[in-house]
Image (tube, rainbow, N blue to C red):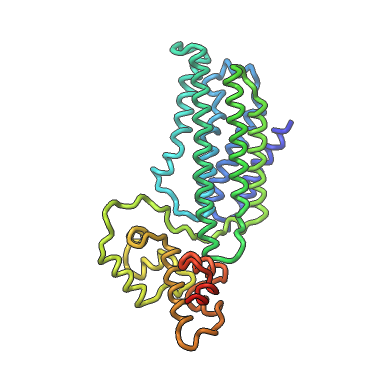
Length: 358
């Protein structure tokens, strides 16, 4: 009875989200993929009849591929929502390899055994196989939730370093934490089933009902609050593995000379792509110089210059009594909170204590 309206609601929400043509299309695409997958799963459960199992054993478990799709879709949605650069095709496809393996193993090899067409595995071996697949699915979901939460927390930190406004997608952290809790219910149900050596689906029912409720809540939130999808891109790179080769001193010095001469940090909206373009070098090369040569990320590197410019300006003759916030704006900061955080991080003191002791 609950699946009928849930299924219809899922397809309807997917349609409404897709009609938001002004929205973040990549985020909508991945979220709709998750929403449609879950709605299709509910449709198949609604139409399922026990008599189908023996006749269609090789495909009857196909809806369970959602076990290996939920994590990747949530992660890819999180990346798109937070405006990270799209993955290259091979990297994108790699996230769906577990789902493809699941289909090949469960819905072909093990399905044909259940149907009686293959005889390589006995019943205990089939049960062990299903247990291992489920354990792998639990681990997969946990890994992707961890990736998603880590990406979100990195974004939120960078956002608050740059903006003073509230983060409209702050609820995403709560959704991800709720998913971690639900994964705990799933793991508990799995342990109980294995320990008792008999199926107990109460935990599974609770897990899927709450997971679907969380995803539907997220769908309504996106539909009712379009600003959620319009976040600024503050994570400019995914911090790829750094090269083991040291950055040439000439590159470090060239960047220092450019920063001192042209003072690009005075632009409150400066991005690593803007700086790389003005220096006529690839963005990844500039990122490596900053990360390895200065042992900082881009925002800390820029804010360090702003803080030092503020200190010089404040210590200049006749500037001691100038309005602090006005001077912070003149040195590239765009909010009081961003200035205070950057100043404390750079000097270890707040502005009042710093100038009182110096």
